[in-house]
Length: 104
Image (cartoon, rainbow, N blue to C red):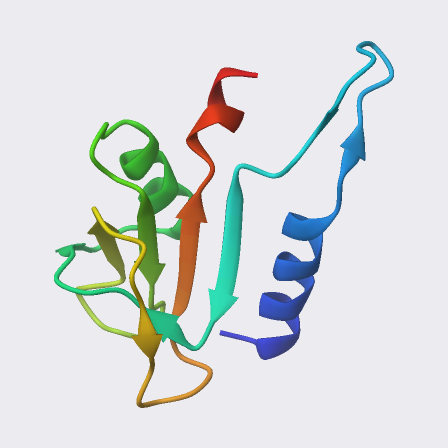
């Protein structure tokens, strides 16, 4: 994955967006962290958007790891936000779901 895209996506996830039709602000539903990964997730071969949707539709999921260069296993569905540093920098991104954001 292009590291510049990762940083851009992370920056966007931290940016607060104002909805002019409502008098509230809302945050991105996902927060990404580059070069971190979780423990013992369920591995699947999905795109990033499919991976996030699978997590959103699983009530026990709190985070996903996404590794686009790993043939056959690109997405890990996680039930814990505990992470550790990756052995191969620039390969995995850990995304934590802000579940209350989904109901907004």
